[in-house]
Image 1 (tube, rainbow, N blue to C red):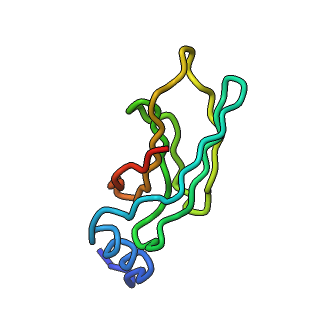
Image 2: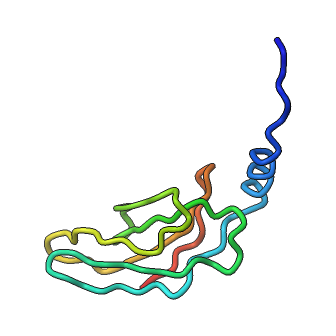
Length: 102
């Protein structure tokens, strides 16, 4: 079986992904609406290993993206409301940062 040339960009991505947990998002804000909430945040200063973001309501994942340029999302709120909003950074191998709470 013939092996192709290594994809150096992909190898660098792997190296950064395994260096540790991505840094936490900063300045998380929530704006309530009618049966929805808009959550926005700033990316961490150190973007190594950050490939996306996730949003948890009361400990349950309700939204995620693997687009590191996204900085806001609007989600439906559950009946009865919610108590805790957390945003985390994600990397492509499934590691996530500690949460930043609103």
